[in-house]
Image (cartoon, helix red, strand yellow):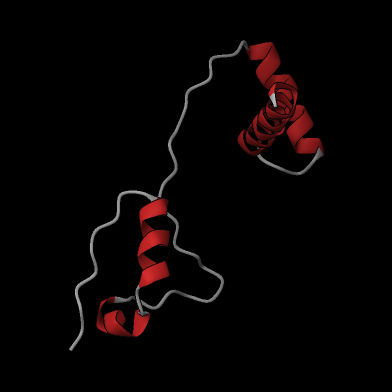
Length: 89
């Protein structure tokens, strides 16, 4: 008999659930995904207001690194958070 999957609101809930449950109990509930596709819950979104000149500079730097500018901003933000945590530790 197949069990019913709960609805998850966060990635943490998904991880916690699968850490304690056997996927074979939910086989009929699972959907097969094409190879290379991973299922991720949406991440929170923030809005950042910057001037046009700064945005163009950001886009140029991102293009030179062959990434999207929002990916570049995200990586810079994570790097800075790590630096700040090191200083405050």
